[in-house]
Length: 625
Image (cartoon, rainbow, N blue to C red; front, side, top):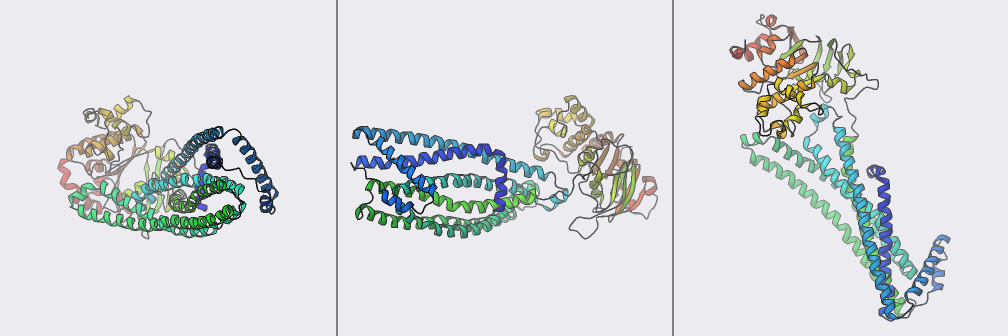
């Protein structure tokens, strides 16, 4: 229940609206009770039955052990009933019938108006809570470090934001409706039944202990199975996401049947769990109903004796009592499912709160300072790094300094730690040991937002969003002028192809920029970096996946972007490597060489020379002079 109470804490914000819903729920319950109670005078009129005298002796007997407040309420209700009967039964039968019909119409009209209003205001609260919950999850995801996203499947995250919150959404409306309206309905009809016959009402209480046992047992089973069901839905979502995003590879390798088989296995497991859950959930209702009918049969027998043998109850009142008791049966059945809904939603909420409660690894220090510009240098001081769950070091004893305006190239074999090294600078990860200093300040002491504003990143895998070219270029600075956007596009050699698109700068690029070529995507990415205009730039193999023509255009754009900036380059382009102020060679996570191209190329035995021969020599003739 602790988890569900936490869900309910999100309702506090909308307490006023919820109170409105509760008020209309109370009015609905009263009108509902009144609509049924009117059946008694109607039956008395239709049967031409003499109104029975109130059994004061019975009332005194049955209420003598009831607290004074309960006794007073019973007496007031009895008095009100007498006054109501006096009004209804005054006049001819035709006048009496007309009064009853008019009251029935009025009560049903008000009942339905109040039902609509309580449902509307409750739906408002329900949807608002789910909106806030989804917003909080999404916001918190952006606070988590890259290490979290490396370990967590995308499909699992989507499932938690969509499917799990949907489970909670369904439970909020059901539980609030059941926990407010159904108890009120029970109280109204129970009070009505008690006023008619206290003995019959007390006799009907035997249903409650049996129902409670069923509720508790089934609820515990449902929570376990609901948690497994939501986890399996996450698996299904992951398979869909992986297959759709990698559809080209799936088709290229002819793996359609394999992916279909993998998906069917997951949906079958979901199907099996759902069936088990449905069996358990659905058994609650028939068991409660059977118990209700059994007690109902006893009530009919006992009540029939009071009418036919003891003559202490009028037939019309007995029928009115039965109507009231029957109206109680449905709320009790609904309440029997409340615990089930709570357990199911709690299981879903546990998965959501696992994310919300996850403390970000990368965050501002309590004493973090503002830093609006880069003035002097960047220093890696004996930096070590490894992932939390790894034993081996990715980087070891990285120690070098980069002055402002300097271009540093990072080279080395695949897996040598080049990308990890530059990822430490914008704090996508934090160093395990050592420190990175920006103008003699540990970057962990600088406000994260300020640090990242100083750094621009262009990677081999260009990330574009499914929106317009204009919005992709202006990403992070949406208030920028049209002139600045066009200027950035021209500097990135992107303007000509952009204006040739169907809607120019307003063209939707598609998911991940799928409607553009690799070179076009990369040039838009560079235009985005140019518009940001950061003093520090990181290029992570920004041209390695492009054809020759696109590579030349992108390289020209990169050279413009590098001017008067401090640059870290991971690249295969010889011109970039040759023009770098320094080249840092990494091997096995360690720095093995530092120097200029001309210096490193002279030593035939070093790693850089071998890399040069393997990767760059064949392209040397193509390099622009």
